[in-house]
Length: 89
View 1 (spheres, helix red, strand yellow):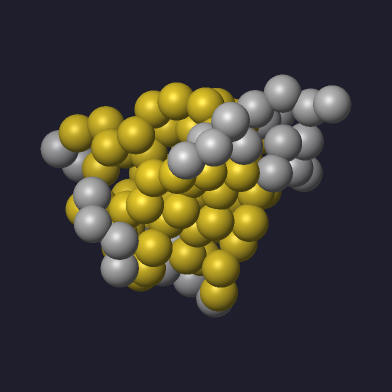
View 2 (cartoon, rainbow, N blue to C red):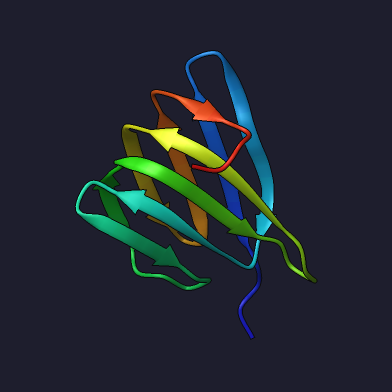
């Protein structure tokens, strides 16, 4: 079984989220993208919408993000966003 993802979400003024995740769904520029452990390396532009992060063992966090870039590599997910709010879209 694959281990959890390491996720880091950063806006210009703060680290919005940093921790482990079982999965996440992000708004890419052309639709939603889901990421699970062992996902293939990927780089995509981020659109505007809800970022949903499911925690290992249950629970989730949601944020509204607007613009930026998402990188997935070796179970490390980094989302650099132009704007993030703790309230979902």
